[in-house]
Structure formats: C-alpha cells, structure tokens
Length: 284
Image (cartoon, rainbow, N blue to C red; front, side, top):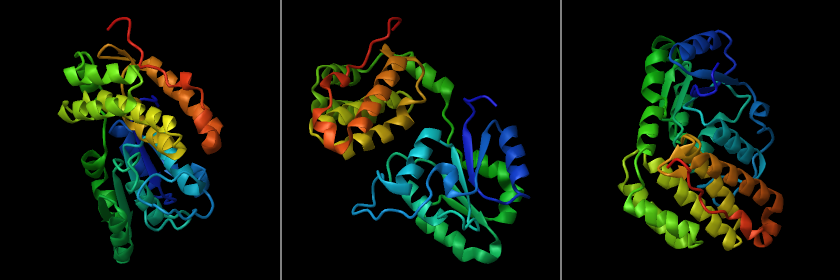
C-alpha cells in the first residue's frame, strides 16, 4: 500500500480479530501494522528506572519503544489488554507522558468480563477503552472518531502563504544563531497561527531549541527536542512559505546522526557548522 497512508498500529495476537482490523483499516484508507511482542518494536527487556518519568526516555526498552512510535507516527494505537506478551499498560503510560508521542490516540479493548484491565488502560492514559464486542461492532466508527489524520491539502494550502511577521522575525533570529530569542518569538508565532501553519512554526521552534541545547552541552535536551520535532516537521511538504523543507529535513537528519554519534560525552565538542540555518526555497 502507499506509504502516505496513515498507520494504525494494533497490539494484539487475536487471529480472529486481525482480518477485520485489516479489512476495516484498508476500507478507511489506513494501513495496519500488527505488534505481537516487544521485539517487534525493538523494545524487549526490562525497563530502566527513570528519575523523571514525565518526559521521553532515552535509554533501554522504553526509549526503543518511543523511537519506534516517533518513526512510525501512527494515527491510532489499538491495544489489546489481554496481550500480556507486551507491557501494554506501561507502554500507554510511557507514550502519554512524553511530548513526542502524547498526541497519538490510544484505544484499548478486551473482554467485557475483564473490566478492571480496561479501567487500568484509561488510568494509564488511553482516550477510550471498549469491550471486544463493541470494538468489533463499531470498529469503523471508532477509527473515524479517534484516529488522528493529517489534512495534507490544508497543510499544503497553509504552506502557500507567506510567513507571519513573527514567523519571519523568528526565522531571522534562528538563522543568526540567536536560538533562545528565536524560540521565544517562534513560540508566539505558533500560538497565533492557524492550526496547519502552526506546524511550520513549531518545527522551527524545536530546531532552535535543539540547537540551543547543543550550545549548552545538554545532550538529553537536544535529543528530546529532535524526537518531538518529527511530528511537526515530517508532514510538511518539500516547500513551505518560502522555506526549503526538504533541505531542512536533510539538515536535521545529519545533525541528529552527528549528535547520536557524539553522545553525551562529545556534545560539547560537536561541530558548530552542523547548526545550519533554515534554508530558503528557490521558488518561494
């Protein structure tokens, strides 16, 4: 199926349910991926305790889980509460306590006689928990109600507009290396922008913060910003409001690879040339 189809990620091993999930997802224009074990997401092993759990984990299986979701950017996560081969409750909580993944909607399901598990799923952060019977009877409606779709047409239309005055000023500050000032201005531009133009300002905002964290030799802060950036930057078309988004994505990818290679010990000596300006688009 086409790679631009939004993804539904289903954590289940119910072989009677999977064909219905596949058929319904396809009919609604989604692609489906099934997860039956932690190894499917590269997230096997016991979690590493974290001093501050209300943020993205950067080590161990939890970090692998978060990275896998950041890369996949599912429109919806379906979680089978009988799937004890994965730490589903812990995964929901981890997903919902990090800015990089908390926008991913979660619908949990399980036998109606195991209501306590459904309640645990909601306490962990799931937007909805339904019985297996209700899921089967109302799957299409649940997907339509809960899945987060990107309106690519609206995003493209927004990208045909010029930058706002605040946005242009924030970009100028970012490209001048004034990253703290840029992030403050771009935050205002994002908050004042219509929803879809906000994706651009949020992207530039988080690039500026990632650069700022590198200047401060804050490896964890920079990595977390790059994780959070993907949900805003990746959906943007190649050109947006005079910015070469394709070029920006290449720059960010190279920057992220160099940061990962340097690690916490080497972040202070990272080549400052990697903190590249946001490139302009030739065609505006």
